Length: 431
Image (cartoon, rainbow, N blue to C red; front, side):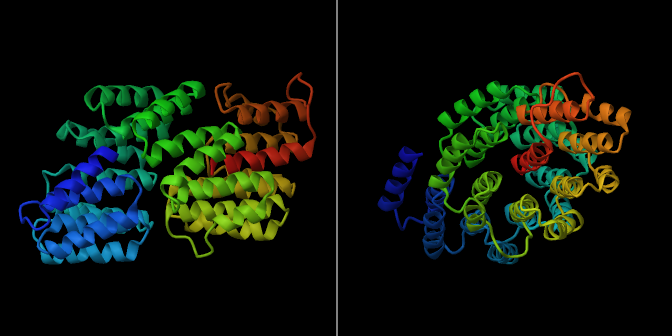
């Protein structure tokens, strides 16, 4: 990246007013963007637009940087201006739809992609973008079919493979996900997204050391890829290696100090440790709209739960479960509501809430609740559905629930407070 930036800057400096090289300005700006230097990238694009005001690619690039900076209102305005001033703008149409998705305005995003597909039916970007909105909405079967069709129509487009692998992983079809990523890796050897998807699937399959090693290889090659750096840190956090995870997130924030997912992941670790002031300093106070803001809202609620402030926690979790447009995020809020009810010993209410979610944490909460009211067979069914290849903190929680409620011959190692604290911890690890 450094070499590429130096070369692009040299071209721009030597041919600053050449009307044939706006693409070189765009290249310089995009390199800065990929290096996380967003303010510099924005300035570079704006200087280029001043010199070449009739180049839509520069205006779309500026809008993309604004999107990365979470300045969504300005990004929408910028894309609207491009679509108004220039014809045949598939990039602007798709970019605008992506901003709507980031804002959680998913129905509008889907409609925007549908319109873009009508206008640009031979372009892969809106087709893949629409499929990703379906995935974000939790319509996984529709998303899978859309990506399969995109992969058939655009076999040269890595996004179609990445998206299909992501859908398979979210559906729990890990073998298909691995096959999809491995096939894509052979076709697109230098696409970081494919390698990140493969590493995340290894993690989902319980191959944690393999996943960490894969992320190490990825970040060695793609030193500025925030998704890769964050993915490695996320595994460390989920494994309970908090000191290492904090260092890994610091590495992300050294590149992009404003990167919300790393900031909020650090906040989750501080919340786990009871360092609430440090956690709160990293969280926004405004009402949530983007996915990252809903994650931060969830963490804020979990801090209320850890302090046994049940009414405040339930108010946050109820809002998130009913209003968050992101389906996976809603599951976190439902699980958090159930965990709160477990702490309050309102087990029947917890069972009712958990029935609306299905993941490892929800099954553990369900087993705890069933065991607490003496429904042993149902508790055992839930416990037996949690495999040994899950994250070690989850496996330990499973075994301790079984031991404390005498659902296994093992002896309990902890007390009830440990059980409740671990349930809160794994929810924050997932956040």
